[in-house]
Image (cartoon, rainbow, N blue to C red; front, side, top):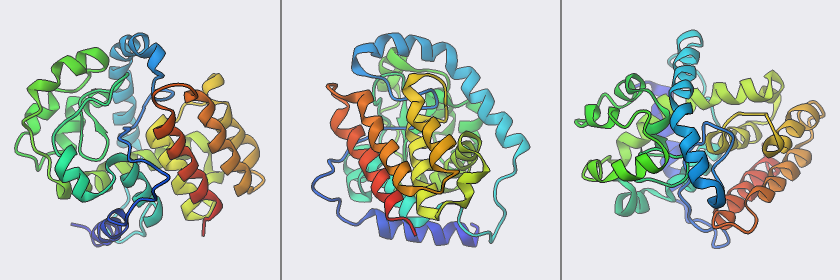
Length: 276
């Protein structure tokens, strides 16, 4: 295993086991490769749409990986340890909570697919990507069969996979080696090269937002992201980024997702505003 990767893993575990502040409840929300996690009131409609979109999304991921190389050995970590710990905390809370509640595949709801590890959504991956990312898991071929299954179909398929155990160590390794490089590149594509000039924790907070909400800049749901890209980043204004992250809470006001996703947005904003 690469030296830099294991260094990041060690830092990740140290950060992830820290107790979570009481004001931010644990929540399991996985990456949303489309615009955002669905609102409860439109869940079924977007789940149906996701069935048709999943194959295109996974194809884009493979194309990006084919033309943009992953980081090589001994490069500095792509993402700051604080930002990595932030994502892990909001996905799985802590290694002990993961071991007791999340080491088996779940369906988070909405347009998600069958999900395991640290927010790894099989429904929005190709079978080839799953087989590559999880090649060290003995049930890799079963996991690969979740590719493209999203929404209500994923909910119905979940019982077929609930007896698969995914240890935290392997989940962590796939997160660092496979997921982070993909979302690093997606964040740069979404916000432009100017994002790379931000302090590492601030860039990492945007990566965490992309991991959860996707990189789309289209439509009213993504207006805050466009402000971050077009106004906040060119001005190197961290407070502006923080305000826009908190403003995203408007998307979930009055829904069952409000507490978890607003808490996550506020946590991202705090990470940006305290960035080093």
